[in-house]
Amino acid sequence: KAGVTQTPRYLIKTRGQQVTLSCSPISGHRSVSWYQQTPGQGLQFLFEYFSETQRNKGNFPGRFSGRQFSNSRSEMNVSTLELGDSALYLCASSFRQTTDTQYFGPGTRLTVL
Amino acid sequence: GDSVTQMEGPVTLSEEAFLTINCTYTATGYPSLFWYVQYPGEGLQLLLKATKADDKGSNKGFEATYRKETTSFHLEKGSVQVSDSAVYFCALSDQDTGNQFYFGTGTSLTVIP
Image (cartoon, rainbow over all chains, first blue to last red; front, side, top):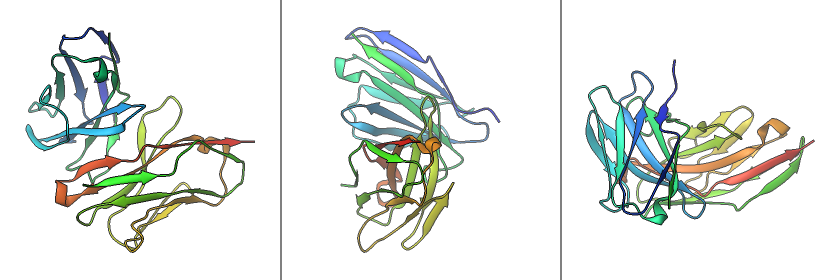
């Protein structure tokens, strides 16, 4: 079974730009969660999608948004990038909910200059 | 709000030593508790979990017991190996917050031969 894939793996953007990250979950998984990992704040929950609906949202500003498609693939968008958005963005999929085993992708490393 | 506190690292042990990584939590409801591990160059993966008080999660020689009275979920292994070198994350998911995931800051473990 293929694992969780994330594209692109690396991104360099400048302040004020926007960015879209993509995540393909494991086949059959309907829950997709996004996390931000930074050295200072650690792993922080961004949001979770299930059946194309945002089911839960962490404490991040509205510049961070996402969506899920009917095939469970998910995208995350960050608008008006700030230097502090530089981080590793991780996607995780699980069968039905986050308390099921989450399978993490390798992440997208975003650098904002 | 919900949170997870785990012991600061890094931790360096000799092979066959006993390992304890402390983890305590704060939650409004009755959370599920997890240990995730990140081996060098790999993505996060679930190590073990416990979903209710007094449950013991175990995997690959690691164990952790859900202690509601002390709000703790300490990770233990009786005899560590070099291959256990990794970063370990304690996490919780609380139904009262819609199963939002909260991770600890991670503890880096290095096992030397």
